[in-house]
Image 1 (cartoon, rainbow, N blue to C red):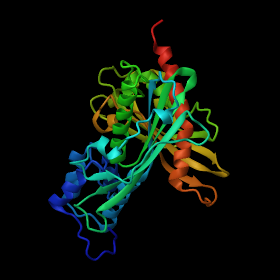
Image 2 (spheres, one colour):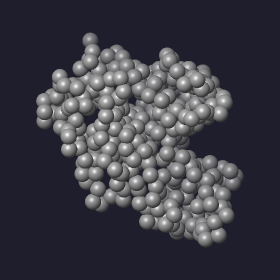
Image 3 (cartoon, rainbow, N blue to C red):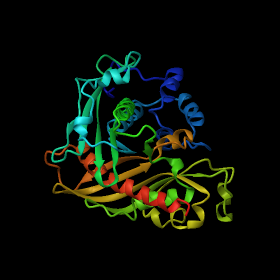
Image 4 (cartoon, rainbow, N blue to C red):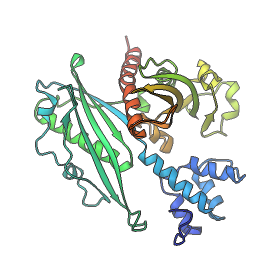
Length: 375
C-alpha cells in the first residue's frame, strides 16, 4: 500500500484490531508507534497497546510504516544450526535421495504457499563434504489486493561434514516463516533418510542450541562470548547496543534489583557500550536474570567493502511466548557500507557475515557444554 493510493482504505475499529493482533506486528512496533504519539502504557503487551490504537485512527504513514517493518523482517535472512553424528562413508551429494520433492515433503494441500521449480542439492564449489540447496517459495495471501497477493521469499539449506568429529552441521537460512517451515521439514526428511540407510545411527539425536541448554549465568557467557569476546576474521566487535532481559521468577533478586520484582515482566535496554553496564558486567546479576537477546555493533571488511552492522543474537520463541526450547537465531538488523557497494546485494552480504559466525557459534557452545558436564 502506498500513501498516495487513492483506492486504499485504512483499517479502523475491529478491522484494525484484527490486523494488529497478527504475529507479524510485534509489540515493539506498537510501543514505538504509541510513544511517538506521546502515549505510554504500564505494560508492553498487545492487550494494552492495541486498545490504545483502535480507539483512534492510524495515519496513512503509520500504517505503511507497519507494513514496511514487517516486509523488512521477512526479507531479512536469519540463520539457525543443527548438529548430528554422522556414520556414513560416502560423499554427501551421493547420500541425498534421488527423488527429493520438496513440495511432497511439505504436504502443502492446506497451505497458502508452494516451493517454486524443483530445487535440489548441489556440491558447494571446492568441497565434496558440503552440499547446498537454494530455493524460493511463493505465498498467496487472498486478504490483500491482487497486486500484492503473491510474494516470493528465498532461503537455503547447507549441510557440511565435519570429518574430524564425524558429525553433520546443518545451516538453515530462512526469511519468512514459510521458509523456516520448509527448512525444518526438509532437514527432518533427510535425517530420516540417512537413518534408514545407516548413515546416521537410529538413536542419534539432533543437537540444537536452545535457550534451555544454558544455566542463566552461562547464557550470558555464551552471548557475550559471541560478541564482546569474539575472534572473527571478517568482523570485529565494537559495542553492545541492545539487550533483552526477563527476571527469573524462580530466583531471588539481589537488593539492588529489588525494583524489578513483581513490576517488570521484561526489560529492553538500548544505548551504547552496554557491555560495561551492570546488567552485563556484574556477575551477581546473571543467576537471576534471563537474557534472551543481545544486539551488538560490529565492524566488517567483506570482499573489499568495509562498513558497520548490528547483529542480533536471540531466542525469538522465548521472547514471544516463554518457550524455553527456542533455538538461537542470528540476524543482521541493519548494515551500512562506507562506500556504495559494487554488485553485491545487501542480503547476500548479510548471509556472508552471518556464515562467518556459524562455526564459532557451534564451537563456543560445545566449549561451554563441556565446562558444565559433571566431572
